[in-house]
Image 1 (cartoon, rainbow, N blue to C red):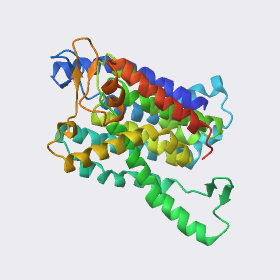
Image 2: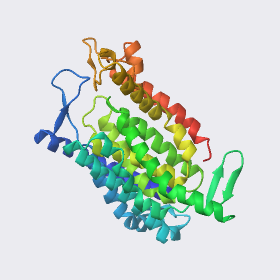
Image 3: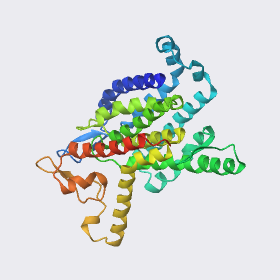
Length: 349
């Protein structure tokens, strides 16, 4: 855990140093988008996820230097573990998967790839983790851990299902859930930060955080990005950032085997998705009804509160029925996410 925190802190500092310079460069090149919940004409740089691409990879590549430089200061309990093939392999593969999602998101930012490709093609990005993760046991509710070496049946079925279905699907789903649960300053980055660091803390409490050091590096960079993305936002994460952020949550869940706990923590994201599906179905049934028109943004009233067209996404429910400003709506989503993160923290699998 010490190494994870050192790496996260270094990633945080690097990201904090880069972001102001990135903002300046993006503004200079007019790579900005409108912030719909501010006064007209407010435009914000939209490619903040680029910094996560760089800082995560840079920090992971210098882990050997970090371990060597800090070995006498922190007295790592198991220094030999950092030299094992598994430690190197799993963290390199995690980084590769994050890079794949980030680059894919960058293409989507510039080319608008389309929802169908976005919800299917990234299944291939999980191949490195399919190769690296080998589940040796299955956690069964109310039973405990079932050793998969006990029977050929479990080895053939569960391992195959976990490797080739659960791993890629879980990562893909969390990536898209995070991408969809956005729209307000700091909403996506803040709720994801809560989920990701709850998962990291859970791994620390279980005494097994060495295989997610790369996630710690990403989590440190995400914290820095959130500080610039929260209200009033100075930069947006873009699809580059949101897809990477969601993928980091999915990766952490499958690497640690927290499938049920991760599902519980992501219940608000799942509800948001189901509300979106209902919205689209109602639009197909009643295309003339203005309530169901596919509107992506609302706007800000003269008194600073939010106007939203309907209560059919989670973030719009409270602003639709109550006069809330943008920070209040986002804090409500933080509180809801925190409740489910706390519940998931006590679920062992």
